[in-house]
Length: 418
Image (cartoon, rainbow, N blue to C red; front, top):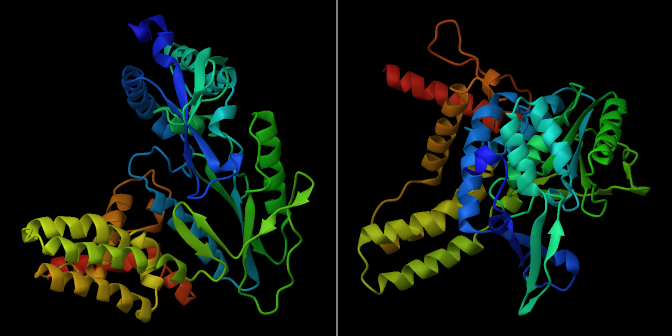
């Protein structure tokens, strides 16, 4: 009924804006994150439209947009960014500039009429376009902070953060924002965006042109770049390089950082992974495991607890960093697993086995998905039995996901043949 009328029942669209916190200790307005709480019925309608949109849009989306895509993951986005960078750095006289873009209230600045035009250009049916425009227009919202509740206000801009459709709508809104230079890559995961400039011979013209184009595109589409949170990291392994001229945003140079948490993984200038390897949380999990043992829980329940609380932390983003981690760091993590084995009283999968199985599984899905941006990196040899090895010139590149995964898949094929 709602879709045929191309309108929504406004009572269902009305939302309450509650706040979560970006940090544990909050004192500034920027520490509050508004989340829209809409009715359960409206969320059900959104899920129906979401499944309809995904079926239509998937072939038309930017290949380097990893959010809300079948057979895409956060780790895929990070691994592709690292592949572009490491493959480029194999050549002499090269370096990379990575701009981590932050939008100011990204979802809240979408213009519904402009979004409708973009959806129409992407062949979304007119009825669906008008339904989405009506969903985003004339919404009543009120804000709750603690026990204080504001008066309602009618909103006709943005897609509320916390709604089911919002991440996909933002992905569609920014779908036309792409790079036109092979030496510059624009990767997106919903509103998490990175601009990777692959610099050769000191020529940064393409990178700077794409940055200016990004700023212009944002201005034309009512998106504001957050100059305080947008940062840049330079990855340069040349001897005694001169610091590059800064990028200017809003009349101020963009801050240069030595490390940045990108989609949950900490990337550093030297492309080492120690900052991603922490024993504090897994050790706390082992302490809790010892306490549970005092209650004589069955081993199966103890293993479930270990898998959910300890193993999930140990293996977070494991396909990204494990192959390049030092033997010392791998040993430290494996000791946590051995401690858990002693508490539970049974063998548990080693970190190496977990890495191998997850890497093979992830790589197998990429091989089976021709539309994945990493698919062409896995080239099957004419014999049909093996994948062509990915050429690398440095251990950094060799130990990254795609070369490592190709090697592991080949080993699995050889074992299967025997």
